[in-house]
Length: 188
Image (cartoon, rainbow, N blue to C red; front, side, top):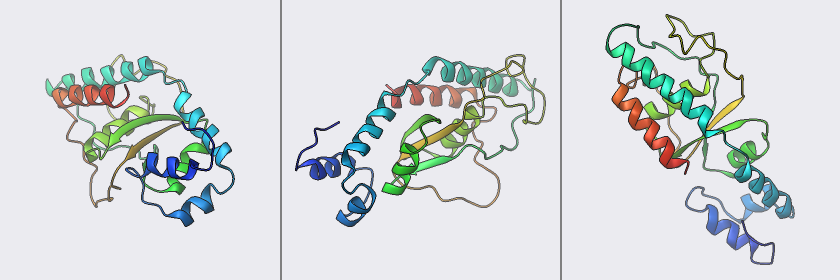
């Protein structure tokens, strides 16, 4: 983070300008003279412990499930409950929503993620909740934590299309493996 001084606005703007489009008015309305509080919130989000092993375990479970789907031992995922939000950090309001929800775990999806990758992360964020239809693997029938999760990404906001969600990863373990590698790279 940066030290609080008269140049803080410039430092803050330079740090976030590649991710957000904002002017002086937006900054003054959202942050105003509470720059110290915002700095502390940003530090708290950065320093929040991410249990990478837990998420990686769920991702590997997803990889094995899709391998079973590819072998026709299980039916593919047909639809997802959209209860995990995917937030594009492109405005101060979006950043404020993330900083104001310290109880939520954050899954970082990188910059300009593909819609299928976002759907897969939302699928992982549901932590194999019992509300999923169809057969489940032995791994999926275990008890998992019930963590409130938010998928966060930078870049352009994805438009909601009509019809089904992009599930190109369903039944494609090679694609799921590439998503695991991307997640590891984005969260170094």
